[in-house]
Structures are given as structure tokens and as C-alpha cells.
Image (cartoon, rainbow, N blue to C red; front, side, top):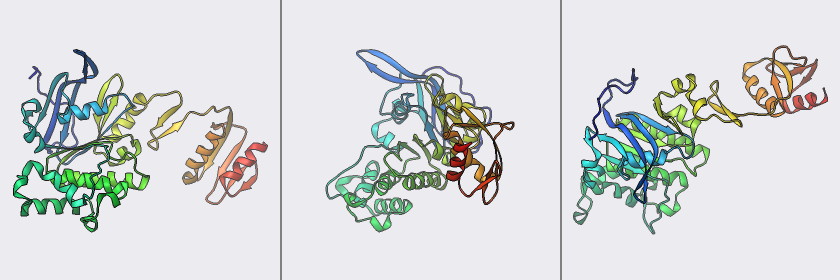
Amino acid sequence: MDNYEKKPLTPYSPYPKMKNLLSAYNLSIGYSKKKNNYTVQSDLNLELKAGELVCLIGPNGSGKSTLMRTLSGLQKALKGDVLIDEKNITTLSQNEKALLISMVLTDRVDIDNATVYDIVSLGRYPHTSWWNGISKNNDEAISNAIRMVHLEHKTLSPLSELSDGERQRVMIAKALAQDTPIILLDEPTAHLDLPNRVEIMLLLHKLAHQTQKGILLSTHELDLALQAGDRIWLMDLQKGVKSGIPEDLVLNGSFNETFESKNYFFNPSNGNFSMNYDLEKSVSVSGDKTRMYWTLRALARAGYKVIPEAAIRIVITENEWVVQDKKVSNIENLLNVMNTL
């Protein structure tokens, strides 16, 4: 193990009583090719606690998948240590790791004639002597895992008959059946529609809190990560990983710094990305706050920047938009009027 001084990784943790399940110290990750090491990220110090949903986000190429594989033991670290329950992951056997970490990958699973129960039962392999069949305890663990992802009515259904969202729930149930303190998920909402993405993120958040497992997932769903994640690991292409609760990372400018681009910017007022339009015209806007946000979006798309002293003024009420004494009932008509001025 590399020499290092164990000390608090952050000056304050919002979860001081939670058990630390996974730690990374002075970790460098990357890959080896023709006896040469290529470092993707270096000197990472991270912690995953019990009862916590952590979302790993960052630009493409920043090393999210490499970090997930390294933390799970599927890939060797170039430097540093990964500790699970205070044990170095390199000292654990495959079966010991299977009792501590379960992983859900993005790969689509297709097994002919396999039912939901069959797939979830595969999660019990570290606990089972398969030649003795499924014991009562294993059967209860499988059934409980299926119940926790709300698929009881699909227990005996073939996997081929399930929707993509239901398939992802099955893979999460398989990880739950494995009954490990740590669950790692690589892009669990990839290829899902919005309702299913929201449901999966909410489900994972509830499972972390209800089961006291440490759940780490990588995702491109920034808006959902900001809402569901207890903590964000924000991975920068050049500056490593910043760890913090979502709101702090928004307010201290970390998101804007990480996702800086001339084409868009992260808007800390609403947690969304906004496009950088060419704003060559100006307008003054005041009034109803609920309608203000959507009005400003439409005006920006039409090339208007908002400044208080602009000659053209728009007043928004609960029922209409008033521009230069002309009243309109919707934003489309408002833009039509703006085009005539």
C-alpha cells in the first residue's frame, strides 16, 4: 500500500454518522498499452458512505467509466489504493469482492427463455452452492429484491417481453439480490425515455436510504443527478474530481468551470444548460415570475438580450403580455409583434 496520511477528505461532511464503505487514496487511473501507462486521472481522494446515493458526472473522456471499473476491481489502479471496508481491494479474492460490490453495466442482457426470477437469481451466486439448488433463504432474497423494484407482477415473465425501463429494474434487482453493501451502476438510465429515467433515479435514491447501501452511479443526466444525488463526484478533464453536495457545487461555480463552453453555459438559477445565442437586439422585461422564465427563453432564441434601459418594454401579467401598448395572449404572438417593431 502506498504511504499516505489518513485525514478527513473534506472539512465538513453532511453525513458524519454514516459508515465509510469505500475509499480511494492518492488514486491514479488509466490504462496500459505495450508496457506503457497512460494516466486519465491522478491523485484522487474519494469516499462512498452507507445510505448515500453518489452521482458521478463529467464530460466525455474525463474517465468516468475508467474510475468505475477501477473502484470495482475490474481494472487495476496505476497508483494509490482502493479500500473496501478498510481492506485493500487488491488483497480480496473474486468471491470476497462479489460479497462486497455488485455492478450494473449498460450492456443489454438477453438470455433465451429467461424469466425475471431467473435473472435476479443470478445475483445470489456468491452466496449459493448451485448444485444444491435455490434454498429458502435465497428464494426470499430474490423475491424481496424483485419486490423492491416493484416488479412482483412480472416475476415469471420472460425478459424478452419487458420494456427497457423494466429490464433496467431487473438488473438493479439482481444487484440487490447479491446483497452487497456497495452497488456501482454505469449509466443506468442510458437508452431510457424521460419517465423511466426519472423513475430509476428516484428508485436508486430510495434504495440507498432504505437499505443503507452505498450506491454510486455514473450518468450524463445532470438535471436528475442534481435532484436525486446526495453527493456529486464532479469529474473534470484536467482537475480531477470535486466531491460535494449538488447545491454547493452549483453555487461555488464548479459546474460552470467543468462544463465551460463557448456554445452553452450552466445556469445556476435553474440547474440547466442554456445555449449561447447571438443576442443582437435588446428588450426590457418585467412582471409575472412564473411566465418570465419561459418568456426569456423564447426571447433569447429570437436573439434578444434583456437590459433594464432597453427602448422596447415587455410587461408580463397573469393573463397576457403587453409590448409597446399591444396586448397578446401567448408567446408566439408576442414574438410576431416583436418582429414588426
